[in-house]
Length: 208
Image (cartoon, rainbow, N blue to C red; front, side, top):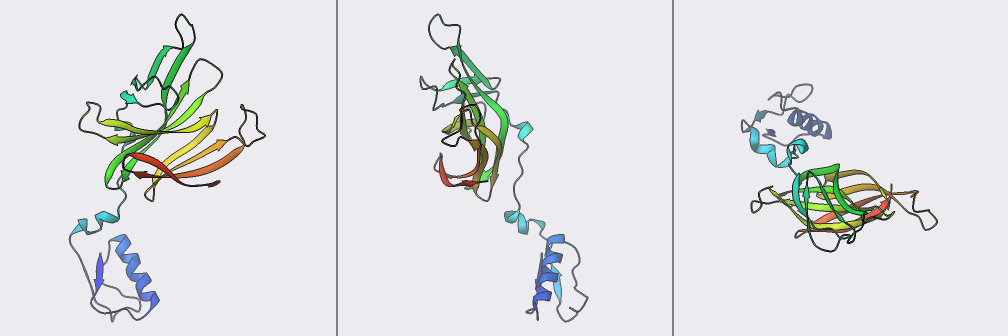
């Protein structure tokens, strides 16, 4: 990062300084800026607070986790290999299936590591319910992650993407208009959630 010893004389000066700051290169400005002397700060960690922390999603192990479904309300279920199965009713061949999909995102919000993942629940009928699950990093459980909240997204909706960005969880999905058949939602929206405590709180929703 470069700090000028005296105030730049023009907007052009600031643009040039910013360019060099971002590139982390030269310690002296030329090209019309010979009157501004700059020095380079040697501590490379000085800008760490501006850098987005990256998380290797492939390294996150969610093969066994306790999931709190808003749909299957008998109680929290333990997912094994990203999935839970149980009989829908005594002596029934139909199954309740709860599983996590590959739509997931991890990052730092409010100073702590969190994750969001799409979960799908079927109860043995034609409905397929989609939920957004909030995960927080935990030292109390062997798997390292705890499902602290879930939000029901809808029946037979389509989730296109999940992201953690700008201090929010962002989801792009297609949901039903009032006239849509359950098989075929047509309204694509973008929803943003904040994390307050250990809960997801929707703060905005709009068409995509």
